[in-house]
Length: 411
Image (cartoon, rainbow, N blue to C red; front, side):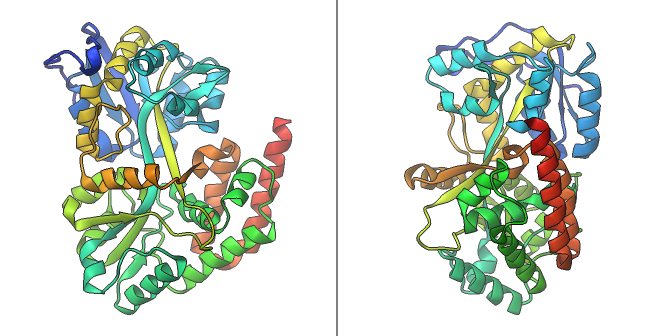
């Protein structure tokens, strides 16, 4: 790991907000190895000598951060997850209140106050946005053009495209269990494309994993697996520093990857230019359903007990500024969250416009939308199903037993 030494801010921050004074060292822990270079670029201008510390996988990362949070050796800043994923840290008093920082930027009209809702508990805000991402399908433009395929607008067009690609010897979709958590990707998408209300009720314990409608999701998913629409689920995804899926996509052996918009940077690291990549939102199974898109928002949290807490707040202030966010967006091709920041690519800019102008219902992704004990165990159950699709009846029973136990404990 390399200590990132600051060059100093070149100019006053946009929107009339002044830069915080120079401070001491801060550590920023994260589990996103592919983002290390982007963190380095942004933090190179931070108002503290800041080191981005990557962890290779999510499980070891969570364990390391949780073990440190009750001590002064906790990192000043660390990446985490929103909603149910951060609630236990807030309840235990382990993360700092950043409500005043949010007020500074919302009063300046640079951030939407509604964005903070994903990090808000009992009226206080405990995180700043590391990213906001939409979940859509990246597609290889050349593969589509060579096979006479247009971005599908209906479910029938989507399945027809998959059949055409498979017949041409091209794997239609990427899917993986690498890193555990990606196992929920297709489960949540099939649920939302079948019935967004069912998805929300299932996430909140108002529907059962053994309901016939959920069984239909598993049957559709199994049908696609049986037809060979997906990659071998052991393929690496980029979550542990490798990106075989992106490489297959770049070579044209894989046509589509359903993932968050943050994956654009990984595809470009695999040798693709922005002009090589297209994106579309998965169509619904029923034509009369309204448009919907799954989103995620991951925060940066500040450790309340860290010896770096005061300086970390100054770095967080800088992180929300337009210069920092423009560098971040330019490095990652993320949808902008600071209103003075421009999208890096036409691809992301057009997607954001479609979502905003098209009246899309925005649906929180599975990892944060349901209680952590359910999500953590569910990805292993779903991963097992991906490896052995015939086991779905038992997987449904296991998931429902887990959900009943979890919801009963919360009453």
